[in-house]
Structures are given as C-alpha cells and as structure tokens.
Image (cartoon, rainbow, N blue to C red; front, side):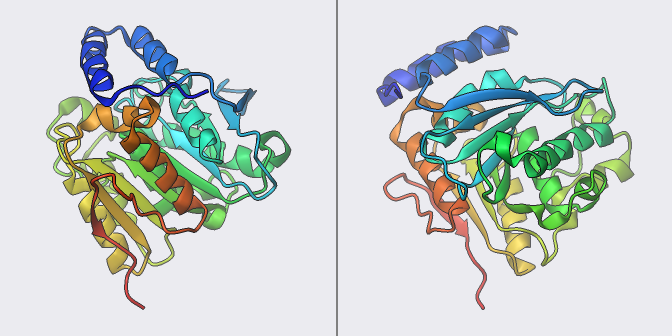
Amino acid sequence: MLKLIDRRKFISLLVSLSTLLLNGCQATFFATVNGIRGNGDSERITEVIDSASGIAVDVYRPASATADTPVVIFYYGGSWRSGERGWYQFVGRALAAEGMVAVLPDYRKFPQVSFAELMNDAALAVRWVADHRERVGSEGPIFVAGHSAGAHIAALLATDDRYLRQVGQRPDAIAGMVGFAGPYNFLPIVDPAVAEVFVDEAGAYDAQPIHHVDRSDSPALLFHGSKDETVRPFNSATFAAALVKAGVRAEYREIPGIGHVRLVFEIGSGSETGREIARSVSAFVGGRSGALAGAAVDQRASQPAD
C-alpha cells in the first residue's frame, strides 16, 4: 500500500535527507525515500539485458496489467556519472500504481565508458522490451522517460534515430517521451565535468536533443520545477516549443515552487502534486487528456494547431 505523508512533513523530511545526499550518503537517502513510498501492489522482476556488460533492468508490473498496458522505460539521472536503478524503486512503484508497466534500466557511466557507449546501453533497454514482451507482461506501446540526465538520454533516444538503429530498432519503436527536469538545450556548457562527458564542442552540440527535432519525432510531455537551479526550466520550455514548431504534439508543465531534486521525489511522496503528476503521465501514455487538475501547473506549450 502507498504510504501517504503530510506535505509539510514530506518537505521537512526531504530537506533533512538532502543533507545525506550532499554528504555522499546516497544509499541511505534513497532507501529512506523508497520506504516512504512502500512496496505497493506491483510485481517486480529483474532481468540481465546484456551479458557482456551485465546491465540489467527492473520491471514493475501492476496487477491490472493487460496485453495493451503502456510500458514506460525510466532512465535515472546522475550527471551521466552515477546512479543505480534500485535507488528509484519509488518511481517504478508510482508508475505501476497508475496502471503502467515501468522498466528501470541501469546503464554504464562516464568515464567507465564513452557517452556513445552509455547511449548504446540505453538503447539496449528499448530493444530488450521490444524483444521480450512476455517478460515485460505487455504488448503495449513503449515510452521513454527520465529525470535530469536520464531525461536527456530519453530525449536523445526519441529524437536522434542513430541510437535505436544501432541496436536494430526502428525509430517508431518509441511511442512518446516523458521528461522530468531534463537538459535538452544546454549550450554553452560551463561546468568542466559536464563538458568532459561530451569530449569536445562538436560532441556537445550533437548531444543537444533540441538539435535533432523534426516532424517525425514522437509526442512529448515535459515537467520542470520553477525553482530548478541545476537544470533551468528554459531547457524544457525551448525543447517543447521546438517540437511544437516542427508539428509534434508536446506539452510543457512548469510546477511552481519545485526544485530539481524535489520534482522527481514528489512522485514517491504520496503528495497530491506527486499523484497528479503520475496520473498525468498515465493519461499521456494512454492517449487521454492529461491536465493536472488542481495541481498548480503552468502549461506553456500544447498541441500545435492543425
């Protein structure tokens, strides 16, 4: 069962836990957040998807899953350098609680591998879902999603055809993309640690999802907190606008008073905003209207006129 928590208590707890995160106690931080969410009613299975690298996925299947249930592949963030799929159990459970099959993959990080190899790992997760429907538990459409660097990964998979083609998948294998606080338009890069990931200026330019937008791209639903000082809301606003200009259905939702880390943790908090975000994602992947009724959201971009 989902553990509901008073919003003020959640914010206070998140502030306290942030100290752990800043001090490098990430495992303790995420274990506590996952404890807030509880186990829910979903089934979780783990599968190795590439024997050479050992990367694996966790699949969260709701009891209500059918052959048509949408599948959401969620890539976690961590500046392309850190993170573990197990830290984000709360995301898998939240998505499953709203009737989606959630797939949380790991991927190798920089500098262990190059950015191109990291993206290949991410594309392998899409291929695995497409090729192992019986293990996923659904034949439904595949969506890619992510937070922060994970949203950047999802956006590149959705806009730059190379990565899916390199693993034998057609670009239309992806039905849509959901992004949380993603960097999609972040030149010039001022942080040397980030610049190093993309090698040089040409690599950094090519890694901007906004530079790959065209009319063939899948629909997108983008969330950003208005107080995000890590990845500015400008990224989501301009990416959504570029998609709409190209003739692609895209929605940008700016949530007042929310920062970079808190945006993703709202999903696992049991707060009304978190539940409405999850419901909105469910509505989007289900092809329904996804308005965040009563959740104080600023929608800046919508479906282009016919």
